[in-house]
Image 1 (cartoon, rainbow, N blue to C red):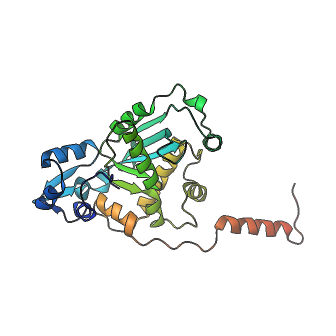
Image 2 (image 1 turned 90 degrees about the horizontal axis):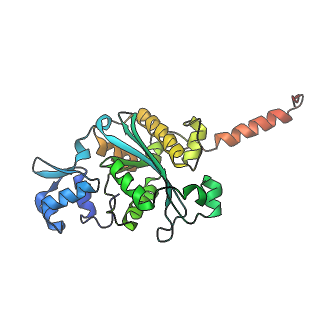
Image 3 (image 1 turned 60 degrees about the horizontal axis):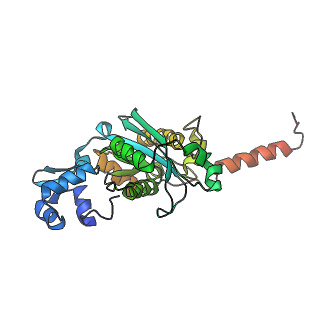
Length: 279
């Protein structure tokens, strides 16, 4: 999920993630010297390496248990980048299933829609002493480094965060990304795959407070670990995992919502002849 400003074609990006990109093809597409391009890309979270005469994402040769994943969640005061901004961000870094570092912050803002305040519990007053968007984006960029960016429905969190960075004068994200929703659809059987529904089904986070960033991060972390444990595919590296989460066949969903069926069964037993009320 690279920025639109990234100079390489889609086919070339696919080669970096698989069989490698020849030097000639790479040099023909970049507007700067090769060394500067590699250095700038690394500064934006993307590590491209040379191996056997071709160029690859370093994640092509990185074992999953050795990789650093950064699980991220954001809350925003709206969905339009021109008008809105991040009001809370949280992230944990995970290596070999273990959380190694944490980051979270509210973000100073002058406006939050009352509906969003009701949903998240975040008010303008709560953010008045918080760091500015620029400060938080700089801190988060440093925290993220070149880790793999993981989120539930990653496209929104990744793009919105990247655009918020650009909004304050930083370069866009180039980190490799992984969608926990896509991964869950291929490793966990569920009627629905929203984070709240999966949490309700599998009790991922007993202390969940949905629509607060760190709470959703911890729920996504538990989901991520569960999905990896359930995966039966032979995945040799991080790029195999990313490809699996995007392209593998989704598991078949149940025809009926089990929670609705439980409610029906409970209602039927209450109304059955001879049922005794304990109220």
